[in-house]
Image (cartoon, rainbow, N blue to C red; front, side):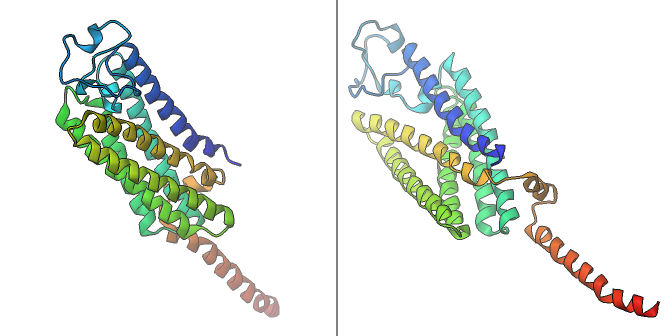
Length: 274
């Protein structure tokens, strides 16, 4: 059992806990309305932070979308930190997963595409976290438009790659788990996107809920790499230092075998000459 398995587990623990802390801070400062609130108004006499009382008047600006929760300070500072740290962890996990596949099997198009989609997702996530939607809407939406599709592509590619490399019953069970999570994430992403474009207050609130579900599913998907990372060793890092080429890594033992067999072949001739 390798300590590398802590890395994929720490990503969902850190990010899911972090965004819920951001939500709690935003709720405490009355920057968004609670998730269980389904009543919205077109306008209110007072803005939400100035309201007092058990019943709050909410507008569409107060829907608890993840980005909305991290728009205003002080929670925006924590939101940027979570997104930036999370994007770095995504890049690192994807790179190690890429190297591990090469080490244990061989490189393939699915593996390379998975690494590329994860790094694109990380780039979009940095934009989402550092360009708040109320102050840099275009850049924020560009980041979101990169992050959501690329993260969905990543889980699909990794699910297919898991099945392609599976040999044991346990590996097939992991593949089943990942496909199930990928399907749930796809449904959540589609519903969130469709509901977000609607004028209905209730549907837009539902869009926020499905967005939360989607993000948690994606983070939990990364956590499933703990199964493979438990078998990781220093040889995985050697694959990266060697340029990530699977062919070179697998040809070395064969070459050594040929050299040793060749030396054994010539040894009797040397003895006979003596």
